[in-house]
Length: 328
Ligand code: HMG
Ligand code: MG
Image (cartoon, rainbow, N blue to C red):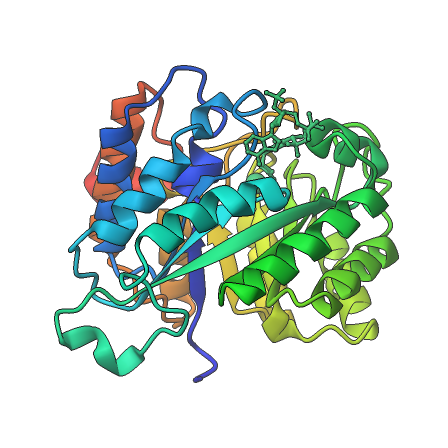
């Protein structure tokens, strides 16, 4: 893989929508996912198999997965669709849909196979731990160690189904309840446990956007010192304090090549009061282009989607780049 390739994980349909109070029609969610799939992005986080009592907006994720598996949409690149699953119950719900649609997804994407007109789609599961006990309790209703035991079971079952597994660690650079006082060694320890349990990738969540350049750098140095490879790490920056691109630059210098972002800067975590959306995908694509990095994503198409979905939700478009591109 050339060093100038960057993988962006589009989390708008999950992180971007989960916090919306008004129920978003299934058709709008599906239109969002399909439009995104045409931009050249290779991974879309499309939903969440969590308790509908906890996050009502994600309640129809089964319908979304089913639609994806039955869709004839031909994306320009092989696609991975990712779904959060906090426990074996969530994975079971996803597995039911996968078993009902056995031939429409592959466990291995074939980069050569994308011109043959066949859907070239893989499904990924994501578990989500926290770096502080308070956030773990608020988000998962259990302590960190209990969550890790549950995730080990989810990872094992997901692997048995042939699914790739991503593992988030949240609040790595600041916690809404414990402040800046998050121990990077704790983050590295949790990450190591999840990788040893079989996770394919760790996504480090700056849930609150409290991350700064020096603290991002310190965290990544600590991850490296713990023996975790940069290719196994993704960065997930919320942009609450406007530091996401600065922290992205630091992460790039450290060798990270996978970043999460959300079209239109949508998003926020229901259990992180005051935190705003992820860094906007449009801003990320533009930033990478200025550095000569290749995301494979069509910036104009992405900007159109950001304009459309924020209008659809009655929100302001939080992507400065998206607005500039559209002359708005
Ligand atoms: P709990 O209440 O302790 O769970 O919640 P429980 O096992 O006692 O079950 C309670 C009820 O939920 C039962 O139903 C279960 O059947 C049901 P009842 O008997 O009352 O009718 N249930 C489920 N239903 C559907 N799917 C499931 C499921 N599990 C249980 N998978 C639980 C524990 C983990 C379920 C809950 O805390 C939960 O759903 N939490 C999810 C919270 C969440 O989605 N947060 C946002 C995503 S994380 C995030 O945004 C951060 C991230 O972006 C990275 C970053 O920015 O840092 C990823
Ligand atoms: Mg998030």
